[in-house]
Structures are given as C-alpha cells and as structure tokens.
Image (cartoon, rainbow, N blue to C red; front, top):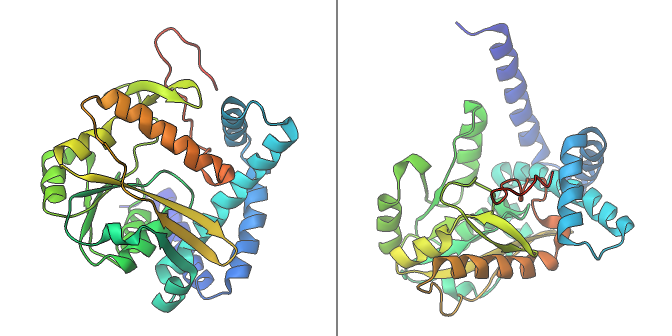
Length: 298
C-alpha cells in the first residue's frame, strides 16, 4: 500500500516526464530560452549549490576577477538547466531532429572497428548529447557503469533515453571489474566518467588545478586490463544544438604508473575545461575529500 507521499511523488514524476515529451516538440530556441530562465531561478534559489560553484571557480580560477567568476557561475547554472531540458528532444524528438542538432566531429574514425576502446567522457553538461551522437555514428554495442536512481520512474526514463539509439549495456558498481573488462576485450567500447569525487576509497590524490584532489585511477586501470586505447569525447553546447568532438587516442597511455596516469588525466581535463569553463559540472563538490589533516574547502 503506497503512502500519500509516494502517490504524490509518482504523480509529480509522471507529470515531469509528460512535460519533457511535450517540450521535445517545441523549437530549440524555446527550449533554450526556458533553460535560461530556469538557470537563473536555480542560481537565485539554490543558495547552497551556488556557493559550491562559486567556491570551485575561486579555487580553480583564482586569477579571474570576481565579476568574471560570478558571470561564469551564472552561466554554469544556465548551461546545466539547458542541458537538462535538452534531454526532452534528445530522448523524445524524431531521430532526424537529433541527427541535425548533434554534430560529431574530430577523429570519428577512431570509433570504427573492434579495437578495445575506453571512451573518456568527462562531466560536461552535454554528456547526454555525447551518448546520443556517438550511438548514431557507432553501430557496435557499448558499455558503461551506472548508478541506479532512487526514483524508479526516473531511473527507467533515463535508461530508456540513454539506450535510445544504441545497444548500451549498463553495469552496476556491484558487478565488479571482470564482466566490464571481458566486454571491453570483446570490442565493446567502455564509456568512463572518472572525474568526480567518489570518496577516499580506492582514490589517489593527484593535482587538479594545483589542488591535491581525490581521483579514482579507473581510466588507467581499465585501459591496462582491457588492453585498450583511450579516446576523449568532449560535448559542447552550441546555439544550434551540440558539437561532440572525438579527440585522437592518447599516446603512451596507460603507463606502468597508475598514479602518474591519473595525474595526466586531470591535467588533460584541465585543458579541456579551460576551453569552456562554464560547461563543466561545477555543481559537484569536486574537492570534498581532503588529504588527512587538511580542512574542508566548502
């Protein structure tokens, strides 16, 4: 027997998904305009998260004037909101619309064939466009590591959307490494998003914008175990949709030193972020885990 609170939550969730289905049919300019409005509302209302974003910019871009960091903070919320609303047309609009709005450029040939491949997909706000764009270009099955959402309706909606254009196999963290590596060696590219703070367990502290930052060395680990190349995938919001750039595979990666590899990953990520700083997922407490004895940064 469901409680009134559970029933209300289910109604709200279904209403939200219905809203996204309707939004999918509107012109992109309307969706993006609504994203600007929603971004400003989030910036004003969600004070605790605004402080997180502002702190991240202060830590990573201390040389920027305060006014510029405030501008980037506002833009971060706007891009975050626009990318969230863009899921409407990414997951529900006609396929031809998605193909027209999401351009995959760069070293696209690297996605061909069956060579074991780890796709390094950092947490830029357009990552869902990256799934869709590459799935439309790459017919072979792929895999990723997925954390279930607490709301089961939302969970099913997200899974259905991310699987829309391709055969995406999802592993939970409880599945362990072996099935992931087996799929990788069979030629199923692995999407890896290792640039969040997952806590001290299995993390190493390596520099990120000059700050010792807890980072999981999974990119090096899976590339080594799967005998795979690493392809960075960078999605960028544009006025007409998204441009998803496939960068060439990293040379001499992985090495025999997973800590050095992880430091290299963070250094490369810095370079990518610097080209579009407001499109990174700064709403996350990237520096939450500190080395023993160091004070919190938030």
